[in-house]
Length: 114
Image 1 (cartoon, rainbow, N blue to C red):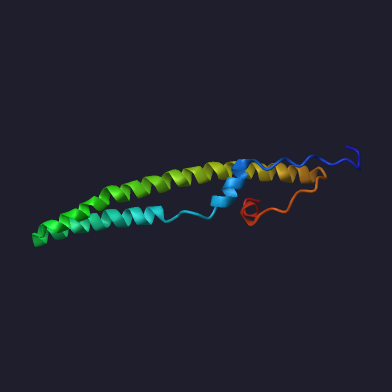
Image 2: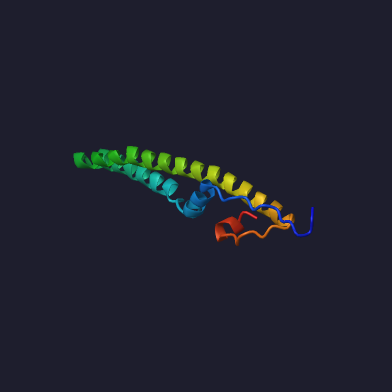
């Protein structure tokens, strides 16, 4: 390689930009879903023990809890897919830098992937 030539800097994929936007979001779905299901079970026990029919309405929290948990699980899977793309992008940047390219400063989310 000629000393004056530099390696091309790979363009940042849109998936990497999306990863940077959502990298720290989420994380509450498991807890919220579990709390809804537990409140539903507690409501059913209370309804059965106290003979208060209105307490059976708490059973409606069970499907809500499952829905929240499924949404969170899908979001987490999406984050993992985007993280894999971001890791590959960082590897490409480091390879370009090793060949003499000047790379842009990494965001804190991408810096953590080093």
